[in-house]
Length: 185
Ligand code: PRP
Image (cartoon, rainbow, N blue to C red; front, side, top):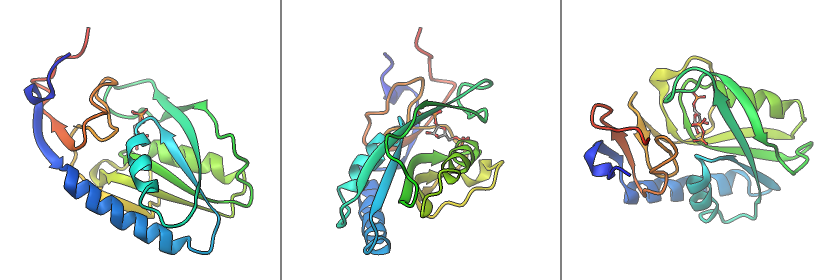
C-alpha cells in the first residue's frame, strides 16, 4: 500500500485543530440539547471517527445509532446521487430529537436523500452536524446546522474519510495530489 506521504498535497486540518473544533461543537450541541433526549445518528463509514470524538465531548447523555448508505453509479471520487441504504437504524425515531453526524457534505445529494427519508419517520426534530463542508460543490441545497470546517474543492482523506477505502485511520485531514496517487490493484 502506498505511503500517504507520496501523494499528499497538503494537510488541510491538523489533529490539534480538529480536536479544538470538535470540543467546541460538543459544547454547543450539549447546550442546544440540554433539556432534550438526543439521538445521534452516525452515517457510516466516513463519520465513525468524528462521531466517536464528538460524543466524547458531550456533557449530555445521548443515545447513539448508525446508518450505512452508499452512493453508486458514476464516479470514483464524487457522489453520484444514487443512494442505497445498506444498514438502517435500529431505533424508531418517531418523536425523537435526531442529530445526524456526517463527515463531509459535497454535492449534498447523500444528505438530502437521508434527510428526506428520515423526515417521513416523523422525528420531533432533525438536525445535521458535518465535520467538513465543501460548499463550492453543492448541487442540492441542504441545511447544515453545525459545521466543523469549510474546505476547498479538493479530494480529501483522513480522519474517517477514505481514498479507495484506505487512509481513514489518519488523525488529520489532507488533500490528495491525484497525479501521484496510485489506485490499489
Ligand atoms: C461520502 C461522504 C458523504 C458523501 C458526501 O460518502 O461520507 O456521505 O460522500 O457526498 P455528497 O454530498 O456529494 O453526497 P461515501 O459514499 O464515500 O461513503 P463512506 O462514508 O462510507 O466513505
